[in-house]
Length: 415
Image 1 (cartoon, one colour):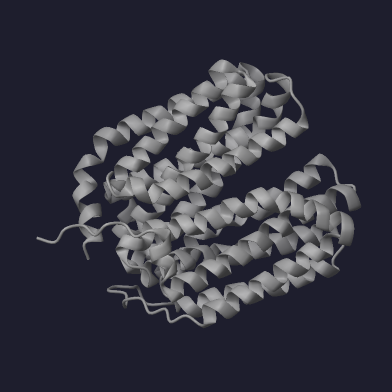
Image 2 (image 1 turned 90 degrees about the vertical axis):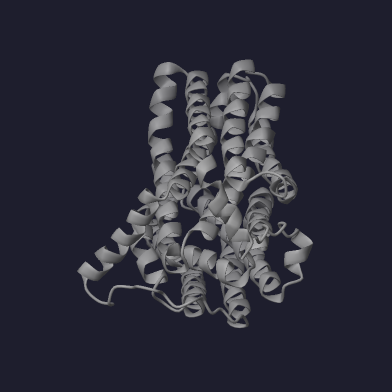
């Protein structure tokens, strides 16, 4: 009987040339994305003197396509050539970034940002499928961790870099770098050979009925697969909790901690630091703990650290809570992504990942609309207590629901 392969380390997977090139492309491109987003917000705020609503619409324009377009995008990702999809997406977004250099109208900025996110709705699931195609099963955890580190590291560094670049050279410098990053990513992907297995059964192309049939097949697989459905619920719940923190953390710092904007910035950074530390340790835990259990522990841990933040209402408790929240978020998001890649057939992976993107984007939008009114009526600490209870409850349900699904995930690593 085959035994499950031990998870590969970061060093192991970086020895693989395709992984190394894909990771470098991700590192350059994601940093450019964060630079551009912060530059747009700064430009709209300080150059165009935008209102709070206009600044908020920047994030809405950025996130809305992921909630709306992703399920349809997944259908085409599962049909189209992966390499052409990735390269074309990068090139289109690079051209759109060049357009940001020349526009000064706020509605044109919204339109460009919205269009870029529509294209990203195709790129992100295609990249996940490419990772599953290029990487051995035992290396998926490490590669997803590397991709997460690129994102979290950029999120920590980009705000200060973007602020300095905007002040010294103007927002156009950030847009120029972001355009370059997309063209660089396209060039790196063009050097890869990406050949996924042929789809076993795909509806004939063309027509709304064929698209609907493909979408239905993806949703049917998700809802009838216990591990997949739980993983998607876990990631959506985790993102909802994270966004509740992100949306109201400034108010919590002001009203509960009676502190300053400097403390708010440091606490935001600590979440990213916790995720980076969690990512570094995750491959070690994965050698001894089944992945579905890591997701459950991550959810429970998130609930505990949200509770710690709320119950103490102190800077020390909040610091521990932010670090712990980021640490547990790494366990959820990286492990869950790996499980999805392992458990989902190749010809459905684009649709499953797109469904995940749709729900995660929708949960963030919902959190923004729900968190503020609840906090105003019940108090922000009670909102955090409610979030903690939700995370702990889902983790407890998963603890009893997922053990039967464990063998499938472990056997997949033996391939």
